[in-house]
Image 1 (tube, rainbow over the protein chains, first blue to last red):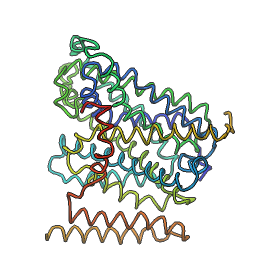
Image 2: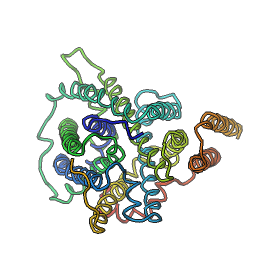
Image 3: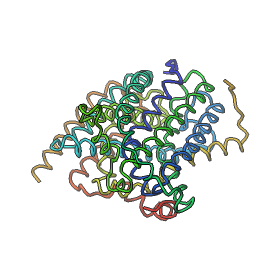
Image 4: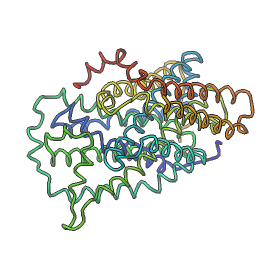
Length: 363
Length: 76
């Protein structure tokens, strides 16, 4: 299992896709509720969280080469505490899985397939992802490396004709309510940047730590740029009406018209979104499977793929029975993600340094 | 009620099918313990959710724990 090697660029594109998929659609609304018109300033500040988590995870991997967060937490905190915290960490990851599948089925049934039962989408995306994971980590990373440029190209096609409609007056006045809303918006965006913690499950397969740091930084920066541009576009086009739409980016893509005869580009959004969600589900699902395998001390994660898939499917419905619960739980989920995906690794690094573990590899 | 009986039957069939599919991969006792500690809660929860669709989930549990912090950090 350790022989499979993947390149840092592939993991970086997997991470970009994972962050972009849900953020392109639901981030503008959530950030607007917190930061108001200043949400684009929050987007400039928020990659700081991404960089902190990236450097933390790579530093931890330098101390314990070839191991992931679930494995080295046993060395740092001792077995009983680390198993309990690891279970909570995986529970949080299952919640993340449930929430992304929820967004996928909501988006599909609200916008395109209004009569199909949602369980069809949940089962199909989970089964396809299960097949991809069964083929190994190399396959997931290669699919990401292959599809990431196409997805980004599609987004550019959709977004460019809209540049004429932007009214930058709608971004004024800047910093109407001071720094607090901007800080809240940046914390809200940590919902996405804290996902970089899942890098820890891919690092044992990556060829070099130094390359991962470089490519990871590129991927954090790209994600931040996408946030800034999508915020300026949605805000510049819709203004304060933004808070009325759960998926503003989807709405503006319906208005896209290129050269006055290319219309209905929202079908391209769906193409992009399905590819993207597939990659994101592959990534987080893989992380949960590998996490559980290491929590139980197994050498091979393949037998656990299907039972974890059943739990992921259930979490979609169990944690979010309907769209209203989903829409009202944004801040709660953000707190949970911040605690487990952001603060927990920081505590692990601090504890490892205090207990005198030194970096073993410098590459 | 009739509908939920059909749903339970389908879930049971899926559970049996999955076990048959995975059985060959479960070689040692450790893998079996790990497999069944995910498999049994999974399908129990599936059947519970069919009978009581409004079972309070993890987000509702989190509410009393994280709501004060969420109120402090976020507006909505």
